[in-house]
Length: 288
Figure 1 (cartoon, one colour):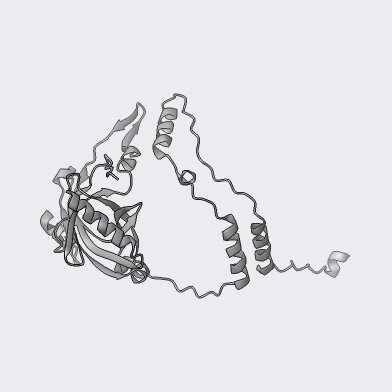
Figure 2 (figure 1 turned 45 degrees about the vertical axis):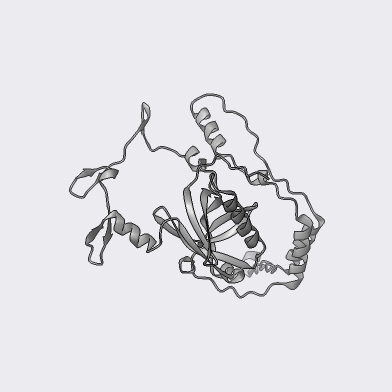
């Protein structure tokens, strides 16, 4: 089957992946999310005047009244005594990414359950695809690595990667028959875990499992989809005084299920009952 390369813009090209310390190949990284989703819903800061909104420009003012624009600013660290120490851009990048070379990742293999218990998925992820001008051998190698990882669900292929001027920890996975770099949150960056030592009601667990089984339905992505771009367009049209376009929003229909009623009855049976209100005693004076 021929490869179908989407027109989606590449975020980083020529990423060198090294696996098993001996197999190396090149891929391009494409964001997993739609690249224009944030830009299409972006709002501008404006001054709200009587004549209407007016575009503004941001300025930065120093304590002595000096006025600066973004291009005039740099980066500095504040020491314990409050002194600001300016750092040049190269020093800032080195401090952020360490000695990682740009666009190179060496993958290590670990038990997947150990990685899953220590890390959580992060915000970012990238689809990896062969370069547009990749040779047949390079595409075959991509397919071979993809098949190897898919056949090893109990193993986690992880490594650190520097993309542009940022460093992150990733796991190489297979999703929708493509290689994907999923960002992981490092253990040191995770919040402390609360200790919740509460024993479950085994009878309710059994009934809840039956409820889960009886209410399971096929996944429909449209139910959880919200078109923010269309909502913004409708809001702008309405605010401008023109009739807003009518759009249909998918809704989730909840169907009554006998198992749900049984579960609710079981919950009511084990729930602590509220004490009956105490009757106020009538005094002799009130009787008289």
